[in-house]
Length: 428
Image (cartoon, rainbow, N blue to C red; front, side):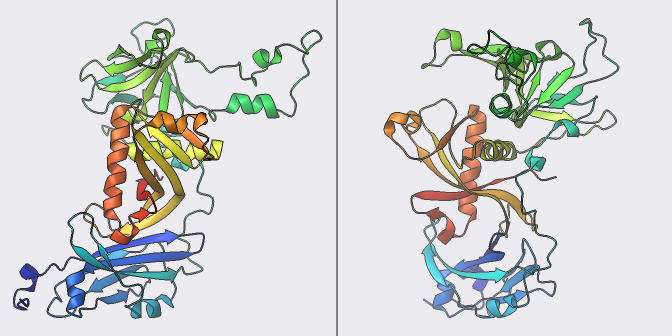
Protein backbone atom coordinates (compact mmCIF):
# COMPACT_ATOMS: atom_id res chain seq x y z
CA UNK A 1 0.00 0.00 0.00
CA UNK A 2 1.53 3.37 -0.93
CA UNK A 3 2.70 5.63 1.85
CA UNK A 4 0.59 8.63 2.62
CA UNK A 5 2.61 11.80 1.98
CA UNK A 6 0.73 13.57 4.77
CA UNK A 7 2.60 11.48 7.40
CA UNK A 8 5.91 10.53 5.84
CA UNK A 9 7.78 10.73 9.12
CA UNK A 10 5.63 8.05 10.76
CA UNK A 11 5.06 5.64 7.87
CA UNK A 12 8.48 5.51 6.21
CA UNK A 13 11.97 5.10 7.61
CA UNK A 14 13.80 8.26 6.55
CA UNK A 15 16.93 7.94 8.69
CA UNK A 16 20.14 9.33 7.19
CA UNK A 17 23.63 8.26 8.14
CA UNK A 18 26.89 9.95 7.06
CA UNK A 19 30.42 8.64 7.50
CA UNK A 20 33.71 10.08 6.18
CA UNK A 21 37.25 8.68 6.39
CA UNK A 22 40.51 10.47 5.63
CA UNK A 23 43.05 8.48 3.58
CA UNK A 24 46.17 10.64 4.03
CA UNK A 25 48.53 8.53 1.93
CA UNK A 26 46.50 9.11 -1.21
CA UNK A 27 45.13 12.46 0.02
CA UNK A 28 41.49 11.50 -0.38
CA UNK A 29 38.37 11.49 1.77
CA UNK A 30 35.85 8.70 1.28
CA UNK A 31 32.30 9.78 2.08
CA UNK A 32 29.47 7.29 2.69
CA UNK A 33 25.82 8.30 2.64
CA UNK A 34 23.29 5.70 3.77
CA UNK A 35 19.51 5.91 3.56
CA UNK A 36 16.68 3.37 3.58
CA UNK A 37 16.32 1.31 0.39
CA UNK A 38 12.56 1.94 0.27
CA UNK A 39 13.23 5.58 -0.61
CA UNK A 40 15.07 4.43 -3.70
CA UNK A 41 12.01 2.52 -4.82
CA UNK A 42 10.16 5.84 -4.72
CA UNK A 43 12.90 7.45 -6.81
CA UNK A 44 13.95 9.65 -3.89
CA UNK A 45 17.46 11.04 -4.49
CA UNK A 46 19.39 12.86 -1.73
CA UNK A 47 20.48 16.45 -2.24
CA UNK A 48 24.19 16.69 -1.32
CA UNK A 49 25.79 20.07 -0.67
CA UNK A 50 29.39 21.00 0.08
CA UNK A 51 29.81 24.03 2.36
CA UNK A 52 31.54 27.24 1.27
CA UNK A 53 34.56 26.36 3.42
CA UNK A 54 34.64 22.87 1.83
CA UNK A 55 34.98 21.37 5.30
CA UNK A 56 31.48 19.97 5.79
CA UNK A 57 28.79 18.18 3.78
CA UNK A 58 25.02 18.52 4.20
CA UNK A 59 22.50 15.97 2.94
CA UNK A 60 18.76 16.51 2.68
CA UNK A 61 15.81 14.78 1.03
CA UNK A 62 13.29 16.32 -1.36
CA UNK A 63 9.57 16.68 -0.60
CA UNK A 64 7.61 15.09 0.94
CA UNK A 65 10.63 14.18 3.12
CA UNK A 66 12.21 17.65 3.15
CA UNK A 67 12.15 17.64 6.94
CA UNK A 68 15.03 15.12 6.87
CA UNK A 69 18.56 16.57 6.78
CA UNK A 70 21.98 15.94 8.32
CA UNK A 71 25.43 17.53 8.28
CA UNK A 72 28.89 16.10 8.82
CA UNK A 73 32.19 17.87 9.37
CA UNK A 74 34.89 16.41 7.12
CA UNK A 75 38.26 15.31 8.58
CA UNK A 76 40.02 17.77 6.22
CA UNK A 77 39.17 20.44 3.66
CA UNK A 78 38.54 19.09 0.15
CA UNK A 79 39.24 20.82 -3.15
CA UNK A 80 36.77 22.75 -5.31
CA UNK A 81 36.43 19.87 -7.78
CA UNK A 82 34.65 17.90 -5.05
CA UNK A 83 31.49 19.89 -5.75
CA UNK A 84 31.24 18.24 -9.18
CA UNK A 85 31.93 14.84 -7.62
CA UNK A 86 29.06 15.26 -5.17
CA UNK A 87 26.76 16.51 -7.93
CA UNK A 88 26.88 13.06 -9.55
CA UNK A 89 24.81 11.66 -6.72
CA UNK A 90 24.36 8.28 -8.38
CA UNK A 91 28.04 7.47 -8.03
CA UNK A 92 28.68 4.26 -6.12
CA UNK A 93 25.03 3.62 -5.31
CA UNK A 94 24.50 0.20 -3.71
CA UNK A 95 21.83 -1.63 -1.78
CA UNK A 96 23.16 -3.74 1.08
CA UNK A 97 21.68 -5.67 3.98
CA UNK A 98 21.71 -4.03 7.38
CA UNK A 99 23.16 -6.64 9.72
CA UNK A 100 21.47 -5.26 12.82
CA UNK A 101 17.80 -4.83 11.99
CA UNK A 102 17.53 -6.91 8.81
CA UNK A 103 16.31 -3.93 6.79
CA UNK A 104 18.04 -2.93 3.61
CA UNK A 105 19.82 0.36 3.08
CA UNK A 106 20.92 2.21 0.00
CA UNK A 107 24.44 3.58 0.11
CA UNK A 108 26.32 6.17 -1.90
CA UNK A 109 30.08 6.51 -1.77
CA UNK A 110 32.20 9.40 -2.99
CA UNK A 111 35.93 9.96 -3.09
CA UNK A 112 37.04 13.58 -2.84
CA UNK A 113 40.56 14.95 -3.09
CA UNK A 114 42.05 16.95 -0.22
CA UNK A 115 42.86 20.58 -0.81
CA UNK A 116 46.62 20.88 -1.32
CA UNK A 117 47.37 23.79 1.05
CA UNK A 118 45.23 22.34 3.88
CA UNK A 119 47.15 22.82 7.14
CA UNK A 120 44.65 20.79 9.14
CA UNK A 121 46.11 17.49 7.98
CA UNK A 122 47.79 15.40 10.68
CA UNK A 123 51.53 14.88 10.73
CA UNK A 124 52.90 12.52 8.10
CA UNK A 125 54.80 10.77 10.90
CA UNK A 126 52.09 10.18 13.48
CA UNK A 127 53.82 7.38 15.37
CA UNK A 128 55.51 9.53 17.98
CA UNK A 129 55.09 9.64 21.72
CA UNK A 130 52.13 12.00 21.61
CA UNK A 131 49.83 8.97 21.53
CA UNK A 132 50.78 7.98 25.12
CA UNK A 133 48.49 9.27 27.89
CA UNK A 134 50.00 10.29 31.24
CA UNK A 135 53.70 10.55 30.50
CA UNK A 136 56.13 11.79 33.16
CA UNK A 137 55.96 15.27 31.63
CA UNK A 138 52.19 15.35 32.27
CA UNK A 139 52.59 14.72 35.98
CA UNK A 140 53.61 16.97 38.87
CA UNK A 141 55.26 16.39 42.26
CA UNK A 142 51.82 16.65 43.91
CA UNK A 143 49.97 14.26 41.55
CA UNK A 144 47.70 11.76 43.28
CA UNK A 145 46.26 8.51 41.94
CA UNK A 146 43.07 6.77 43.02
CA UNK A 147 40.91 3.80 42.05
CA UNK A 148 38.91 4.61 38.95
CA UNK A 149 35.79 2.91 40.29
CA UNK A 150 35.42 3.73 43.99
CA UNK A 151 37.77 6.74 44.34
CA UNK A 152 39.95 5.00 46.94
CA UNK A 153 43.29 6.88 46.99
CA UNK A 154 46.23 4.65 46.01
CA UNK A 155 49.10 7.11 45.68
CA UNK A 156 48.74 10.16 47.87
CA UNK A 157 51.96 11.90 48.92
CA UNK A 158 55.50 10.50 49.08
CA UNK A 159 56.86 9.61 52.50
CA UNK A 160 60.20 10.73 53.82
CA UNK A 161 63.28 8.64 53.19
CA UNK A 162 63.09 7.14 56.70
CA UNK A 163 59.65 5.68 55.88
CA UNK A 164 57.79 7.83 58.37
CA UNK A 165 54.24 9.02 57.76
CA UNK A 166 55.45 12.59 57.28
CA UNK A 167 55.27 13.58 53.65
CA UNK A 168 58.33 14.59 51.69
CA UNK A 169 58.25 18.30 50.74
CA UNK A 170 59.88 17.54 47.39
CA UNK A 171 56.92 15.46 46.20
CA UNK A 172 56.95 12.69 43.61
CA UNK A 173 59.64 12.29 40.99
CA UNK A 174 58.24 11.05 37.67
CA UNK A 175 60.48 9.39 35.08
CA UNK A 176 59.59 7.87 31.70
CA UNK A 177 60.87 4.36 31.12
CA UNK A 178 62.66 3.70 27.82
CA UNK A 179 61.47 1.27 25.18
CA UNK A 180 60.68 -2.22 26.42
CA UNK A 181 63.73 -3.73 24.69
CA UNK A 182 66.16 -0.89 25.44
CA UNK A 183 68.66 -3.12 27.27
CA UNK A 184 68.91 -5.64 24.43
CA UNK A 185 69.26 -2.85 21.87
CA UNK A 186 72.12 -1.28 23.83
CA UNK A 187 73.79 -4.64 24.29
CA UNK A 188 73.78 -5.43 20.56
CA UNK A 189 74.15 -2.00 18.96
CA UNK A 190 76.19 0.14 21.36
CA UNK A 191 78.87 1.61 19.10
CA UNK A 192 81.25 2.38 21.97
CA UNK A 193 80.76 -0.79 23.98
CA UNK A 194 84.08 -1.31 25.82
CA UNK A 195 86.03 -4.52 25.33
CA UNK A 196 85.75 -6.99 28.20
CA UNK A 197 88.87 -7.27 30.35
CA UNK A 198 91.32 -10.12 29.98
CA UNK A 199 89.94 -13.37 31.27
CA UNK A 200 86.32 -12.46 30.45
CA UNK A 201 86.40 -12.63 26.65
CA UNK A 202 84.53 -15.92 26.50
CA UNK A 203 82.30 -15.43 29.52
CA UNK A 204 79.77 -12.88 30.70
CA UNK A 205 80.80 -9.31 30.01
CA UNK A 206 81.13 -7.53 33.40
CA UNK A 207 80.64 -4.19 31.63
CA UNK A 208 76.99 -5.15 31.17
CA UNK A 209 76.61 -4.76 34.93
CA UNK A 210 78.81 -1.71 35.48
CA UNK A 211 78.21 0.41 32.36
CA UNK A 212 74.44 0.17 32.38
CA UNK A 213 73.83 -0.93 28.79
CA UNK A 214 73.50 -4.70 29.13
CA UNK A 215 70.36 -6.80 29.29
CA UNK A 216 71.38 -7.84 32.78
CA UNK A 217 70.92 -4.30 34.03
CA UNK A 218 67.34 -4.12 35.31
CA UNK A 219 65.15 -1.18 36.22
CA UNK A 220 63.96 -1.38 39.83
CA UNK A 221 61.35 0.58 41.74
CA UNK A 222 62.58 3.30 44.09
CA UNK A 223 60.69 4.94 46.94
CA UNK A 224 59.53 8.45 46.04
CA UNK A 225 59.96 7.85 42.29
CA UNK A 226 57.25 6.77 39.84
CA UNK A 227 58.52 5.14 36.64
CA UNK A 228 56.12 5.54 33.73
CA UNK A 229 55.67 3.36 30.65
CA UNK A 230 52.93 3.20 28.05
CA UNK A 231 50.34 1.35 30.13
CA UNK A 232 51.55 1.26 33.75
CA UNK A 233 53.17 3.12 36.62
CA UNK A 234 56.01 1.29 38.41
CA UNK A 235 56.06 2.29 42.08
CA UNK A 236 57.58 1.11 45.32
CA UNK A 237 55.34 -1.00 47.55
CA UNK A 238 56.06 1.35 50.45
CA UNK A 239 54.58 4.30 48.52
CA UNK A 240 51.16 2.73 47.97
CA UNK A 241 48.16 2.39 50.21
CA UNK A 242 44.65 0.96 49.96
CA UNK A 243 45.73 -2.16 48.03
CA UNK A 244 45.71 -5.84 48.92
CA UNK A 245 47.59 -8.74 47.36
CA UNK A 246 45.58 -11.52 45.74
CA UNK A 247 47.11 -14.63 44.15
CA UNK A 248 45.86 -15.39 40.65
CA UNK A 249 46.51 -19.09 39.96
CA UNK A 250 47.00 -20.06 36.34
CA UNK A 251 46.42 -23.66 35.21
CA UNK A 252 49.34 -23.67 32.78
CA UNK A 253 51.85 -22.17 35.22
CA UNK A 254 53.55 -23.64 38.23
CA UNK A 255 52.86 -22.41 41.74
CA UNK A 256 56.16 -20.56 41.72
CA UNK A 257 54.94 -18.44 38.82
CA UNK A 258 51.54 -17.57 40.18
CA UNK A 259 50.74 -13.95 39.42
CA UNK A 260 49.99 -11.70 42.37
CA UNK A 261 47.42 -9.06 41.54
CA UNK A 262 46.93 -5.87 43.48
CA UNK A 263 43.26 -5.23 44.20
CA UNK A 264 41.56 -2.19 45.65
CA UNK A 265 40.97 -2.78 49.35
CA UNK A 266 37.64 -0.97 49.08
CA UNK A 267 35.93 -2.35 45.92
CA UNK A 268 38.24 -5.28 45.07
CA UNK A 269 38.86 -3.97 41.54
CA UNK A 270 42.15 -5.07 39.98
CA UNK A 271 44.54 -2.09 40.11
CA UNK A 272 47.84 -3.70 39.13
CA UNK A 273 50.24 -6.59 39.59
CA UNK A 274 53.36 -7.27 41.60
CA UNK A 275 56.57 -7.08 39.55
CA UNK A 276 59.14 -9.24 41.33
CA UNK A 277 61.88 -8.52 38.78
CA UNK A 278 61.53 -4.75 39.18
CA UNK A 279 61.01 -5.16 42.95
CA UNK A 280 57.89 -3.03 42.86
CA UNK A 281 54.23 -2.76 41.94
CA UNK A 282 52.87 -2.00 38.46
CA UNK A 283 49.66 0.02 38.54
CA UNK A 284 47.49 -0.09 35.40
CA UNK A 285 46.60 3.28 33.90
CA UNK A 286 43.27 1.74 32.87
CA UNK A 287 42.34 1.30 36.56
CA UNK A 288 43.24 4.77 37.78
CA UNK A 289 42.16 8.39 37.80
CA UNK A 290 44.66 11.16 38.48
CA UNK A 291 44.61 14.53 40.21
CA UNK A 292 47.52 16.25 38.48
CA UNK A 293 47.74 19.56 40.29
CA UNK A 294 47.42 20.18 44.01
CA UNK A 295 45.51 23.38 43.27
CA UNK A 296 42.84 21.57 41.26
CA UNK A 297 39.98 19.35 42.41
CA UNK A 298 39.66 17.76 38.97
CA UNK A 299 40.33 14.03 38.61
CA UNK A 300 40.92 12.89 35.05
CA UNK A 301 40.72 9.48 33.42
CA UNK A 302 41.50 8.17 29.96
CA UNK A 303 39.28 5.79 27.97
CA UNK A 304 40.52 2.21 28.16
CA UNK A 305 40.72 1.94 24.37
CA UNK A 306 43.17 4.87 24.09
CA UNK A 307 45.59 3.19 26.50
CA UNK A 308 45.36 -0.15 24.66
CA UNK A 309 45.79 1.67 21.34
CA UNK A 310 48.95 3.25 22.74
CA UNK A 311 50.25 -0.22 23.66
CA UNK A 312 49.65 -1.45 20.12
CA UNK A 313 51.28 1.62 18.58
CA UNK A 314 54.32 1.16 20.80
CA UNK A 315 54.62 -2.47 19.68
CA UNK A 316 54.29 -1.39 16.05
CA UNK A 317 57.20 1.00 16.54
CA UNK A 318 59.32 -1.42 18.55
CA UNK A 319 58.62 -4.77 16.92
CA UNK A 320 57.36 -3.67 13.47
CA UNK A 321 54.35 -5.91 14.07
CA UNK A 322 50.87 -5.28 12.75
CA UNK A 323 49.06 -8.45 13.88
CA UNK A 324 48.31 -9.20 17.50
CA UNK A 325 46.66 -11.89 19.58
CA UNK A 326 44.86 -10.19 22.46
CA UNK A 327 43.54 -12.26 25.37
CA UNK A 328 43.09 -12.23 29.14
CA UNK A 329 44.52 -15.66 29.99
CA UNK A 330 41.48 -17.61 28.81
CA UNK A 331 41.35 -19.94 25.77
CA UNK A 332 39.39 -17.44 23.67
CA UNK A 333 40.69 -14.11 22.43
CA UNK A 334 40.87 -11.65 19.55
CA UNK A 335 43.08 -11.71 16.48
CA UNK A 336 43.82 -8.11 15.49
CA UNK A 337 45.33 -6.69 12.33
CA UNK A 338 46.15 -2.99 12.60
CA UNK A 339 45.29 -2.05 9.04
CA UNK A 340 45.92 1.68 9.45
CA UNK A 341 47.67 2.86 12.64
CA UNK A 342 46.54 6.47 12.27
CA UNK A 343 43.49 7.79 10.45
CA UNK A 344 40.70 10.28 11.02
CA UNK A 345 36.99 9.82 10.53
CA UNK A 346 33.74 11.70 11.03
CA UNK A 347 30.37 10.17 11.77
CA UNK A 348 26.84 11.49 12.11
CA UNK A 349 25.82 8.81 14.62
CA UNK A 350 24.47 10.02 17.93
CA UNK A 351 27.39 8.54 19.88
CA UNK A 352 29.97 10.78 18.23
CA UNK A 353 30.78 14.47 18.16
CA UNK A 354 30.55 16.51 15.00
CA UNK A 355 34.36 16.86 14.94
CA UNK A 356 36.64 14.27 13.38
CA UNK A 357 38.07 11.52 15.56
CA UNK A 358 41.64 10.20 15.55
CA UNK A 359 41.79 6.42 15.60
CA UNK A 360 43.48 3.30 14.30
CA UNK A 361 41.59 1.13 11.83
CA UNK A 362 41.57 -2.46 13.07
CA UNK A 363 40.51 -5.67 11.38
CA UNK A 364 39.53 -8.26 13.97
CA UNK A 365 38.08 -11.71 14.43
CA UNK A 366 37.25 -13.75 17.50
CA UNK A 367 39.27 -16.93 18.05
CA UNK A 368 38.36 -19.84 20.29
CA UNK A 369 41.85 -21.22 20.87
CA UNK A 370 44.57 -18.65 21.47
CA UNK A 371 47.28 -21.26 22.13
CA UNK A 372 46.86 -22.88 18.72
CA UNK A 373 47.51 -19.52 17.04
CA UNK A 374 50.53 -18.67 19.16
CA UNK A 375 52.03 -22.18 18.93
CA UNK A 376 54.90 -22.15 16.40
CA UNK A 377 54.19 -25.81 15.58
CA UNK A 378 51.19 -24.61 13.64
CA UNK A 379 53.60 -23.39 10.98
CA UNK A 380 51.93 -20.04 10.50
CA UNK A 381 53.85 -17.55 8.38
CA UNK A 382 52.20 -14.62 10.17
CA UNK A 383 54.25 -12.52 12.57
CA UNK A 384 52.10 -12.31 15.68
CA UNK A 385 52.65 -10.44 18.92
CA UNK A 386 50.88 -11.58 22.10
CA UNK A 387 49.17 -8.91 24.20
CA UNK A 388 47.76 -10.11 27.50
CA UNK A 389 45.32 -7.75 29.18
CA UNK A 390 43.36 -7.79 32.44
CA UNK A 391 39.94 -9.34 31.91
CA UNK A 392 38.00 -6.07 32.30
CA UNK A 393 40.32 -4.34 29.79
CA UNK A 394 39.95 -7.17 27.28
CA UNK A 395 36.16 -7.07 27.56
CA UNK A 396 36.13 -3.28 27.13
CA UNK A 397 38.27 -3.48 23.97
CA UNK A 398 36.07 -6.22 22.56
CA UNK A 399 32.95 -4.17 23.29
CA UNK A 400 34.40 -1.04 21.67
CA UNK A 401 35.45 -2.89 18.52
CA UNK A 402 31.97 -4.36 18.08
CA UNK A 403 30.35 -0.95 18.66
CA UNK A 404 32.60 0.70 16.04
CA UNK A 405 31.82 -2.08 13.59
CA UNK A 406 28.10 -1.30 13.91
CA UNK A 407 28.91 2.39 13.46
CA UNK A 408 30.33 1.80 9.97
CA UNK A 409 28.18 1.75 6.82
CA UNK A 410 26.92 -1.77 6.13
CA UNK A 411 29.11 -2.17 3.05
CA UNK A 412 32.27 -1.25 5.00
CA UNK A 413 31.83 -3.53 8.02
CA UNK A 414 33.67 -6.56 6.69
CA UNK A 415 36.83 -7.30 4.71
CA UNK A 416 36.95 -10.95 3.62
CA UNK A 417 36.87 -13.00 6.86
CA UNK A 418 37.64 -9.95 9.02
CA UNK A 419 35.33 -7.51 10.77
CA UNK A 420 36.30 -3.85 10.55
CA UNK A 421 36.53 -1.69 13.66
CA UNK A 422 38.43 1.21 15.17
CA UNK A 423 40.15 2.13 18.41
CA UNK A 424 40.39 5.79 19.34
CA UNK A 425 43.82 7.26 19.99
CA UNK A 426 44.89 9.69 22.66
CA UNK A 427 45.60 13.12 21.20
CA UNK A 428 47.17 16.09 22.93
